[in-house]
Image 1 (spheres, rainbow, N blue to C red):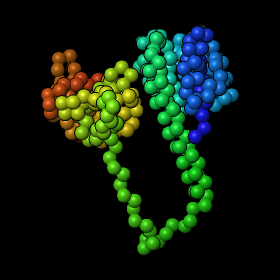
Image 2: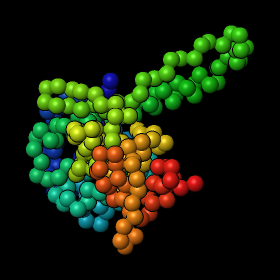
Image 3: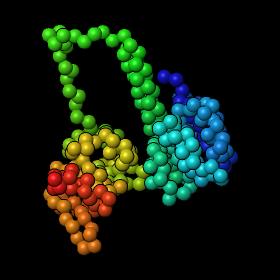
Image 4: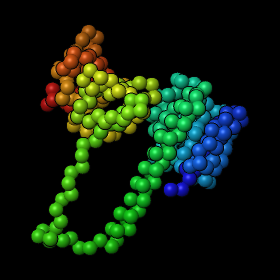
Length: 268
């Protein structure tokens, strides 16, 4: 597997030097360029086509979010925002950032984020290769086989699971066992029975993995398993909440009420 081509963007020279020094410890990473502002970052992304961008948020004239807008979120490399301002966290994930490094961060936190970013880059590469192979084979596909000669269907894939690390142990949580998911800073908490597990995934990433027929986003910080919903209550001031079988109450945002009711089978 080729090196992870990385772009470092920060308007502070010392910050760039620190990030580059940490990246220099990773033999799988190649820093292809450094940029001091957003305009340089846009040009460097076009010129170098990096796999990963460590992108400062607050920069003069063209900030980190403007860089994403100019390139286009769908065409951006894997992005980790790096900033000293925690108020941009939600906006960063809305911009499809993989993670959000809040300065000052520890070396361990930085290495964890880069390890996760490298895995996402590898997944993108595998997906791109698969798409290219499928397109190539589409032009040379044999005619459809008769019903008698058709191969048997491939066995169904096992249901998806969440990987949860507990110290030196790794456990797997089946998706159908999850009662609800709660946002927790840059992570998410899986509520399973009486246990709570922290996973390094954003709510957006988790929502994409879940079956929309079984799980519903009730507000920006919570996703619930509709099979665990006991009732939906309306309170004073038009407030609404779902009540789970174990008594947990989770508020429903005003804009999601109709969708939540349909998903839970209450509305026609």
